[in-house]
Length: 187
Image (cartoon, rainbow, N blue to C red; front, side, top):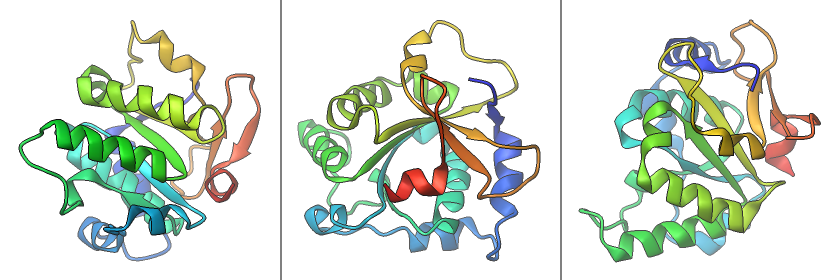
């Protein structure tokens, strides 16, 4: 992966959108539909896998996606999600992954260490591989994670330039093929 964003860079990018930035507003606009069948029929519905320990980085990435007018499934905004986690939680997550058209792992250090995120990535792999799954690498600093080479088999989202633009991204496939993120989201 050539470009890994830091959490501070992601925050700057989220604020650069054409609409007024507000994480609260962005999350309020994220559509949580009780009927996931109905949600999956929309052209751009995404399951975002993430560590709850990285809520701010996740909210910034969700704000960027909101600028691109896509529907995002967030487990902790799902009123039907049991808490604390149970077997029913796993069943609900499995269903949400299957029914959303795209799967993106917000790959922070915490997410890569999370048993839940790795489990979700495995489910996403089985349900979406390779055209509808991607990794969004976000580091705590500029160091790349080591020991997680398995992530290299997945497409990843790359910032195209140093400019702080929310819509300047590509999805890069393992064979080097690139597609504009907006186009990928609409496929």
